[in-house]
Length: 90
Image 1 (cartoon, rainbow, N blue to C red):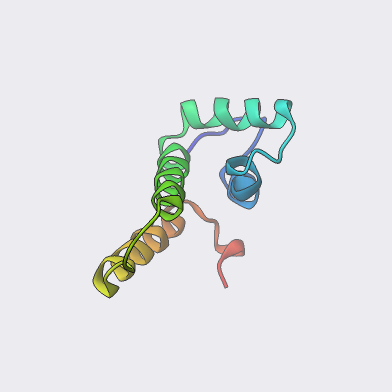
Image 2: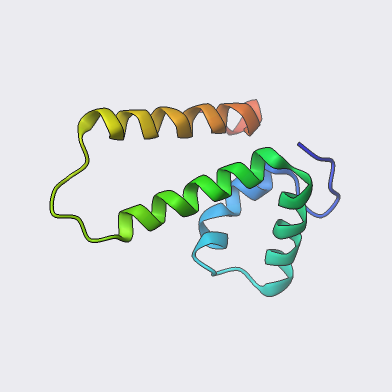
């Protein structure tokens, strides 16, 4: 994680959905992009979520097996545990 004065990891996590959905202003997106160039953990979260969203948007004839769904959910939990401050956890 980085000490980027523009955005910290916790704030980035709170804005990740809007960022991925392109709902943030250009300046905020640039700050997030700059943070992710310096913070591999946040870059990995965003990359993983982009890939997951992409897979979800692909047409499927059948649902994912439960084991794959559980594995994906656990991977997301691990990533969030690595970078989310205690105050963001339930």
